[in-house]
Image 1 (spheres, rainbow, N blue to C red):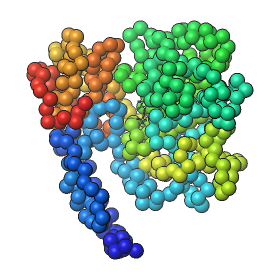
Image 2: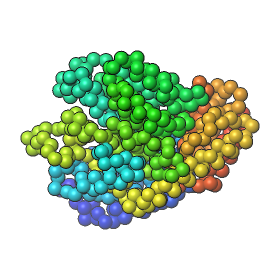
Image 3: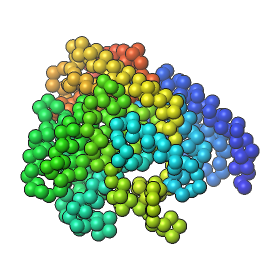
Image 4: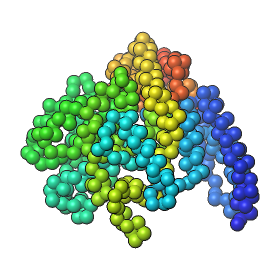
Length: 474
Ligand SMILES: *Cc1c(COP(=O)(O)O)cnc(C)c1O
């Protein structure tokens, strides 16, 4: 064994303790550090011939890289839909690495069974019935891609083609209909060989991002019996609007289509009796995407993919090999997802659900929604700002008063980031350049929200200035 490895092996408990101490300092200081670190990234250095050992690597990381990391796990990082990591989720994530299980199945470990238990808990949390089976994937984009891969196989079945064998060219053109699809949907269509151009956007209701179900029915009628894919959206990123899933599901009686629901973060509405009606009808979906590294507050690399059609999933993803064979009975995860070897990414979710239960996670969702409303009310009271949509759930979409240019809105976002107080991301909603503040972090409090409002109001009241130090904001 290389002497550096032998040395690290002999001091493994101390090394883990150093890492723990370092992480504890970083995480407990999240509130105090600038939300976006000033300054750029250090220049890349050459590969070392001789290593520094784990302790040396930690010291180098702490010096060169840690200062530039954002406080994205902290309470005032409201860009995208980010979420943090609960204490129990971090514990589970550390243990995932420490145990280093391959949750593909068939590995003489109970890891896959733990993933199944976690999937059962999540299914219940999101109001899905027994007909839905699930699998962990890396994020909602992959979950959407897997769901649409099953849709593609199903369409093939309708047309007498086994797409998984014959290829997508044998399928012919596919119709994909959606009101306000997330950008990951065209990406998935590109990956799957269906093509981005096959996505047809259906008109939304006036002043909304939810699909106009009557117009969707017309679009389906116009297909003249040709089967299609409908992507329903449960929680749009700008205004957290929800398609009427029940009404869309009812259309299945008249038209043949695969219903995929992108409930990446909106699915969490089901955790609260106050908002659960927004996801009514989700159980009728053929495939469902829910992200976990957003509103469940587990570290990155976790989403789930649910489907009522595990048979099609095995057809698409089975990995037949001399030592794995073809699945019989409950299929191993290797036969259900794009990966073969897989991280046990269920463990952080298992820990967080075991630690805080349904009630604890419901509290996070309800608090985040209450804080989004609080920020929304605050913004409505600032003369220089304008709320662009009612705060439906956990996202506040707003802009500058008047008809602001893209440059002015981006400068506002940059000024907020440069203040170190908060981080918001730009968007465009109903043709207006805007900013979004998305609440999904378990740590965010009322006083954090007031600090965000104060930072935004200050930046809006001062004239736009030249691009500042926090030049990594874009
Ligand atoms: C975030 C998001 C996605 C993509 O999720 P990733 O985890 O970034 O892959 C897809 N759909 C919706 C609605 C989202 O909010």
